[in-house]
Image 1 (tube, rainbow, N blue to C red):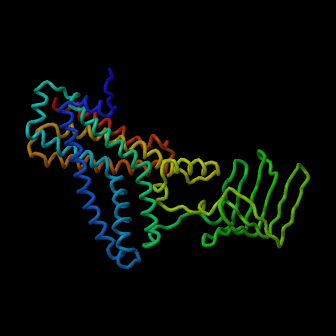
Image 2 (image 1 turned 180 degrees about the horizontal axis):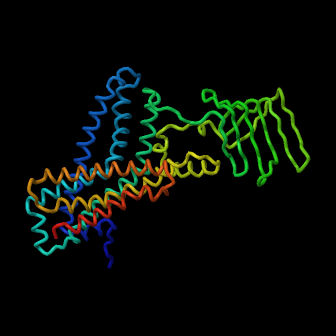
Length: 376
C-alpha cells in the first residue's frame, strides 16, 4: 500500500484555517491593489515632469514604454514597499474593525496572538518578494534606468577620480596615475610600485599607459623598470619603446556614478567592496551602507504589519480616515528615518549595520507599545 505524498506548500496550506486564508487573501489583494494605484500615480507624475525631455531626446516610444517606466516603477516600489504593506494592513483591517469582524473574532475565543499569525504569514511572503527584488531585480532595473538617463538625458554625472589617483591593485602592489583620460582609456605619468613589507622592491614608470583589451591588458610607452635588491639596483630602459603588460586595473575602476551603488546586485556589490578594500580605496562606505540596507529594510515589513494591526484593529470615531492618516504618517516617518540613518551612516563613524538597523529597532519598540495598547 502506498501513501500519497504531499508537497511542503500543500502541507503548509492545509495547516491554515479559514480565518488564516481569509486574512491572508485580504492582505495580499489589498497590498497589490495599493501597488497598482501607487504605480499609476508615480508613472503619471514622472511622465508630467519628463515629457519635455522625452520629446527633445532621441529615446523611442518603445524604450519609454517597455524599458524606462518598468525600471522606474521597480525603483519606486523598492522605496515604498514597506510603507505600502502598512497602508494595506491598515486599510483592510480598519474595514474589518468597522464591520465588527475583529470584535467577533476575538469574542469567539481567538487570542490576539493567534490573530496575528495570518498577518505574519502574508508579511513573510511580501518580505521574501522584497528580499529577492532588493538584492537582484531592483539593482538590475536601476542599472538600466541609469543607463537610459546617461544616454538620453545626460543627468547622471560620472564622479570617478581621474587626477592623482592612488590605488592598490594587489596586497603589496600600488598604482599611481597623474591623469586618466576616460575618452580613450589612456593614463599619463603611470607608476607601478611593488613592496615587500615596507621595502620597495620594484617600480615601473611610463610616460603613458593605454588600456588595450580585457582582461586588464595595458601598453606602456616610454617606460623604465627598476628592481631593487638591497643596495643593488637594476634598470631596464624603454625610452622610445612600448611594452604590453597585465595590470589588475581596468577603465571601469575610474567610473563612479552618484547612485552606482544601487545598480549592483548583492553578489556584485560584495565583490566590489572586497575589491576596493583590497586596493585601499576610501570610498566604499556608501556601498557598505547599501549592502546593510538591503538586509535591514525588508524586515521592516513585519514590524510595520504589527503596527498596522494594532492601530487599525479597533473601531474608532471618524472611521477609516483617521487610521489611514495615522498609517500614512507612520510610513512616511519610516521612509524619512531610514534615509536619514543611511545619510548619517555614510557620513559618520557610526557602525554601518547599527545605523541601518536603527530605524528597525526604533519601530520595533513602537510596535511593542502599539500592541500593548491594542484591543484584545
